[in-house]
Image 1 (spheres, rainbow, N blue to C red):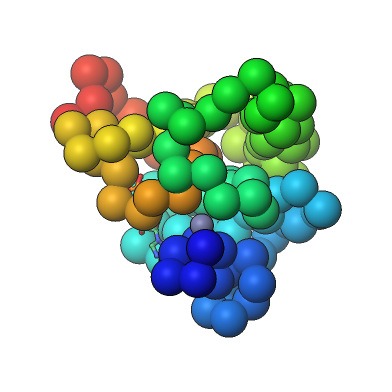
Image 2 (image 1 turned 120 degrees about the vertical axis):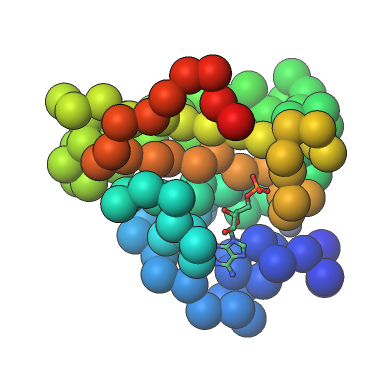
Length: 114
Ligand code: AMP
Ligand code: ZN
């Protein structure tokens, strides 16, 4: 999508601090971190939100989560615990309409979320 900020990160039109990339996904540092570790993981393919996922995306979503499992080791937060968040739609707090997963760590998170 031409005017999607995360598609522009994928195409490198917008610079970002990429920590991992493969043919299906990219992981980069959040520009406005909410924790000492705050990474955004996105599929390279433009999917607006979780609402737009279909059966064909199940391998992709599995790959994203298994990659997160590897990244948390690299980030040194695996044993301490961490949080993976998907905000969906307006009430869910989604501000970028390209599905993404926040990986947050290195501080204590409260529940319920704000
Ligand atoms: P959400 O509010 O769940 O849609 O999350 C969007 C996230 O993207 C926010 O945490 C933003 O700080 C982050 N973000 C927006 N633009 C950029 C960017 N250019 N580089 C890195 N992170 C970004
Ligand atoms: Zn996009």
